[in-house]
Length: 217
Ligand code: DX5
Ligand code: ZN
Picture (cartoon, rainbow, N blue to C red):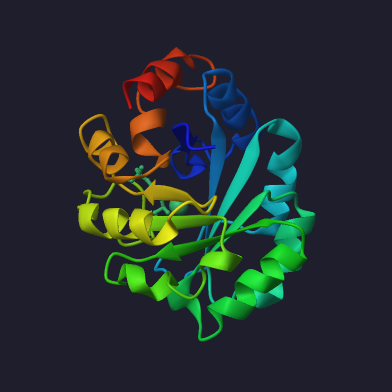
């Protein structure tokens, strides 16, 4: 299904109120919920782990899209699968065995995503296409919300050609706003992660801005 999906990142929401934030942004039109897991090792920031994902799960009706910015990945796959992740995305840069990691993610019953940092070429996934349900193209260096967009148009175009008619999503993560998002959609993306651009100006008690922000992207 190539229809455009917006996946708000709860990294930009109220960390003391994830359940209500997820319900609010879903009611306002979010297609998926994007959950950014950071370990302070693969990226220079720490967020949360599988227990938080499990706590969020009952508050979400749609797809829980879990972005693992951790290394190693494999020891934690089962915990995130049990926490209710629908999609588990691992970075190709997170270790020497991404092929094994993607197999393990599918083996745990999740859709398998593979993420590429801005410095990593499209070709890094050339031998992973049959193990992959989603390719996440980072348009910032991972670790923080609210960073400036790094244009990856040529990488997205290359990936769209490599994918051919395989059912693989291309997701863009970082700096998505009403100006940058159309560039990525034109290049071939069908899932857009947006944190600050969705949550700005709203709150659980005044969630209408979330809807307006989603529609503006
Ligand atoms: C960055 C995260 C992103 C981030 C996007 O490391 O993977 O999902 O939340 O935030 P914005 O939309 O604010 O760039
Ligand atoms: Zn992310």
